[in-house]
Image (tube, rainbow, N blue to C red; front, side):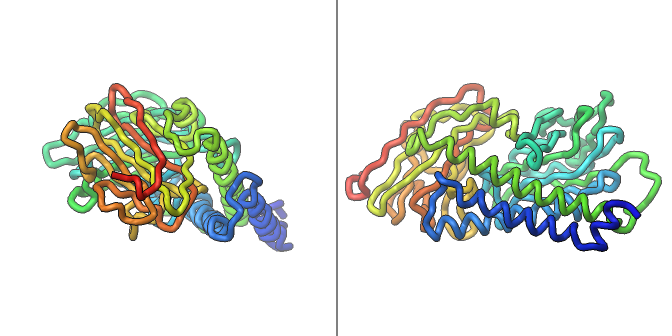
Length: 365
């Protein structure tokens, strides 16, 4: 009898999984995290969201022999300052195989695809081993294209991967989500002899439960620590450590600004971008302490190049306020007094700094 079979029969696989989740609660109670019931409740909900994503990634869609592009971050699974303008997709791969992505470009503003080494559950990194975006793709007149993913270079659209690459990530970034059409994508392993996955095995279940619990711990710890690192720049928005952003899965075409914010009930924050550079797009978003984007289904918590109001001189002023200030580019706090925030220049050749001021809402003009 294998070790996995024994763990299934004696129940220890499930017990260890549950014990691990219980231990993850300590992350939410970190000393520097907000200790009020509202933010703590969001923290525990965050763990449930990470768990849903982890189970999908490590159990339901973990087979690199039969990869599936799945949307792992969306309206109710959020992490790492997830971009409300993005559709995120990922698929499991293994570097000894070659893969093919086929699809239609359609009209989404930005399409970027990377091969990565995902270690969120064991070290907190997500190294990019290859990248291609729509500007480099050879696309047929009908909008169709094909990308080969392999370790050795192939003619046409080629996405390289490294020896340890274990995942594909896709970012589709919209400027006008209502009218733009997302790219249609499908991934398959080249040369597959079997036409369907094998049934669940004890080994696969044990690996899946362990992977999901490690994912919850790893992701929650990493982003809690990152949020705490913003405390020295509270209510300012300086450039982030770009090397670190790339090491945890940032898009190579993006320059990031990250920090934390805190506003009293009668305060507002005004962020001014004096210069908007030539770029694919840009955006700003407001997040909670756990680095989840606030609920953009029901609140205006972000603006981008298309949706923002511009001043006559071409600058942009974003106003973060608990109540409607009667001014353009109002970002709602959605019941929060503290959290994190992110500004992105996407596809820009230079990256102008931002001006941030906190004032009483009564003084805002």
